[in-house]
Length: 121
Image 1: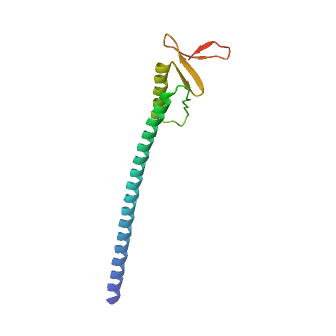
Image 2: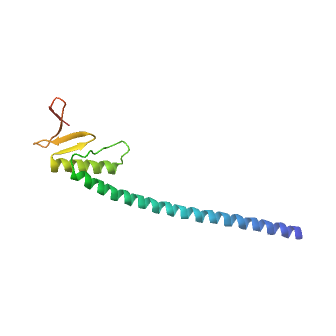
Image 3: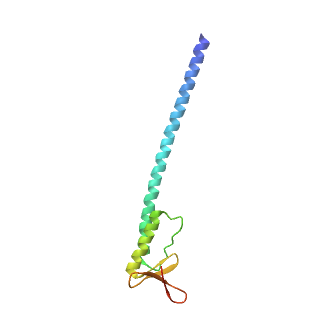
């Protein structure tokens, strides 16, 4: 009888420790998850502030190159295209991807060829 009580007590203790161990892992995981989400939010806010400053600096000078790449997100590409169009309207010229583009008198966008002619894009 005493052996049966000892086995029962040991099994109850094992179940209790397993339950505590699982609950601790769940709590730790939820803390890590909340921490990662808040750090992602901070990174997004910082990136937005940097993009605003970047756009303002690009708008000030049409000679600065706007580089687009395959790795740019859709929002970044839209922002860069908007800055490019705004510079074309404001200054009549804008450099994008290393090529100076000009706004024509009828609204067309062109670049100069090596021979000096206009190539509309």
